Image (cartoon, rainbow, N blue to C red; front, top):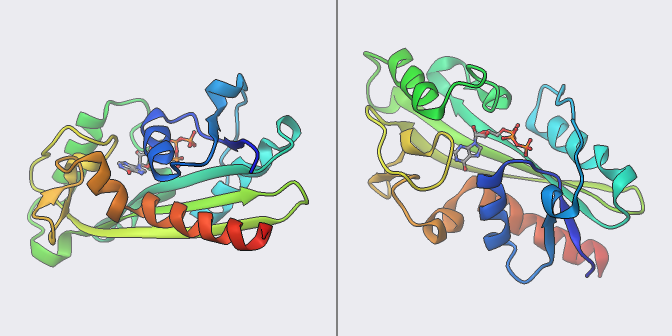
Length: 195
Ligand code: ITT
């Protein structure tokens, strides 16, 4: 398979993507020397992932993948959701994470439920668009913990692990994460579509 362009400017995502898609030649926008400002004006993860993959079509002849992901907090009506990257603007994640914990003050147990969602879109050279989705369920921790991963990882506590997704190794996170599930499903889908 030829080189696959991954349409993301998020370095935390890109690190995970390269590990999960080990064996495939995946290059980032930065490595491809492509700079493009994409307006993510969709209202679903599927729409935004498709927008990102298709926006790069003029720049790349081969397969283009894109990731749209975020944190859904049930008590906050699934906020920040598709706006996870834009939540509280440019504030550092220490502040964003603290804000979510504060908004859940007094909320206990299962009512703190949340999930990471990841949708991967693939734009194929023949115009086909494929999508896959992965999720990982957790609850919002009362205190941030761990320094692995990126973004909201320190506040997403996974009961089965007894830890947040920032406290586990990159390998462990990729094995169970929203992104790991969606990317492995996309790898299989591509293999059958391109067979
Ligand atoms: P690109 O659009 O360039 O890919 P982005 O960061 O703007 O980068 P999104 O619009 O998909 O990407 O927003 C995803 C946000 O959701 C991300 O910035 C984090 O805040 C959060 N997020 C997604 N996956 C995460 C993960 O595995 N761990 C922690 N936070 C995550």
